Image 1 (cartoon, rainbow, N blue to C red):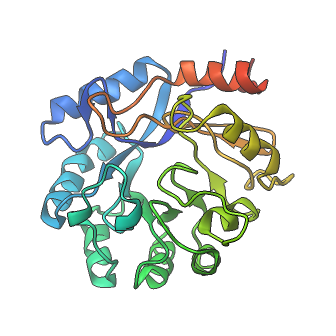
Image 2 (image 1 turned 90 degrees about the vertical axis):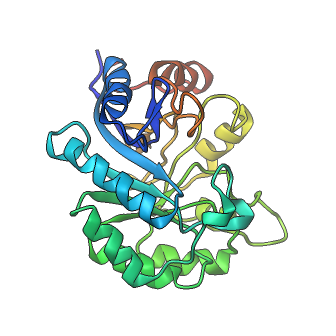
Length: 269
């Protein structure tokens, strides 16, 4: 027996998205995750026109108030067009403080995490503002240099959105954000651990070289759907397959992958 999973980044499930305006569809997505062991869920939203994003935030607030979700994560619109991934590059924006304050106000304090590309103009001030509002900042969808990444981490960014994906490749001549993240002891890593987005040897590399600490607030997050669990000084998460038709995958196959592939057990095994 293991404890219930806490999912900190997921865009939906069961064929439905958390951005769906139909609350019954959102409820079905949540029910799918509950049926597979997720007991605490943060709902993630992708890049949209600002007014639509506000509407999606508002639509999720009742689910926060009734305890169905623990908060909202904005993965966009403050991302790099060079590393936009599945996000519409035409909708990406530079972070503006007044705009961010407005989004936080619309969320009524329930926006718990925002992903930002640190090289964007205004990103550093945005990170400082979000941290002052007790919002977790993740770095991701970024083409930043190490020189651009270090101040963002110093300003309070603590998580990497799906490490290796939508980031520069690890380089032995150019100091990129990827290089900077790997050597920083204050960063949590997320991995899309479905055996496709990140190859086995890259997962193994991260497990071996990522900074670790004896303190529980340091470590490395890996997994498939971002259900989070902790093992000693490592933290593990499960990240879904983004916002495709079925925008998440079940935790247990990912748990088997990390267990059988790397010999790491979840608590209670």
